[in-house]
Length: 305
Image (cartoon, rainbow, N blue to C red; front, side, top):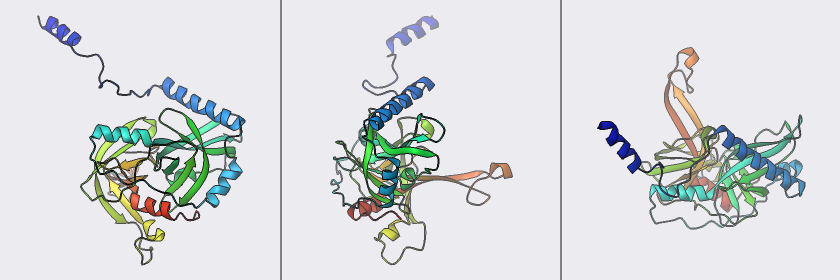
């Protein structure tokens, strides 16, 4: 009798485990390989058609950004459901980084982290450390941005790059769905992040704003200067890991309140846990570049420092 009831219950329940229309990420080894192959094939074609900047041109732009002010959209004021926030994050999310040829083979290597659109005409925000990765092993290459459909867009300009802020503004030739930047957030407010930690695609998490803090005392007298804003950081409890860098951190209205910068563990043996020496992790800090710094960078972007 019990087996019959279980059978009837099983056939009465839907076989899918998600709401209708919800995407399912292909996390299998073959799925990731296919995705990477598609990005590589598009990159080859863009390079062959001379639609990508050369390595030399890209490096020059990093050294001397275009320095044009960016007109930002007005922050959203209507509260969204968590599902709505996830949809907004996905629509604006880009995988940003380098596509390059190494010194040892003719295969295109793809090294991507996160990014997010901040205007509707192709301005993408990400981390400075994402675009300034080591180029010692590259004989040619360029920065690219991959949208949520898997389409590869070559980066055509670098508007700003600030290492202390850990922020960069890039340009692609495409219509984009922006996340407005908002600095109206306080500890205790909800915080969300959509990213790809450790190659785990479409990972969405919710937490809270933990605190704002000054990372360095060497910041001058003006708290709104770019020098000071390079020392201003934000901790949140949303989850991320390597691969998430540059991904937006959002508020309950679908605004970007910052982006993923670093992750660090702290233990009972100094600032970093050391299990080999008997240490243990006591806290993991998720540190973001705050929107206030990115708004200042967009308003008056400086030459890379």
